[in-house]
Image (cartoon, rainbow, N blue to C red; front, side, top):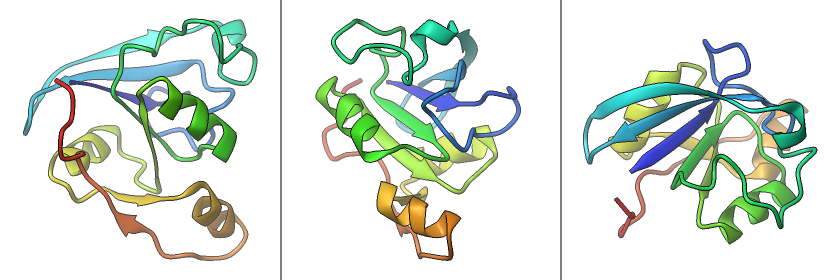
Length: 133
């Protein structure tokens, strides 16, 4: 399974996905990280600039973790078979391991928006029952 994590500064989970041009791509099995590689995309390939109809360098991942994803972009990812997850976790490896352990606290786009303008509780979310390998 491949998990992408948005990380514009290459150190932490990026708060906003749309303009992000750097992603860590994790190859994982059910419980561990196998490899981790940095993927750099061009500004034209960022989700904000690219067309939902075009192929995208992240089309091969099954899960995309970010600090913020709008509803439209979440639907775009889901239509490509990618599970979008919004989390307040900023540590890259910790976010992936929490996902693998079914303990990653995630938010809906609405909860994320409320959190930016107040506070809203997240909920736990992990691997789907039948995740593709």
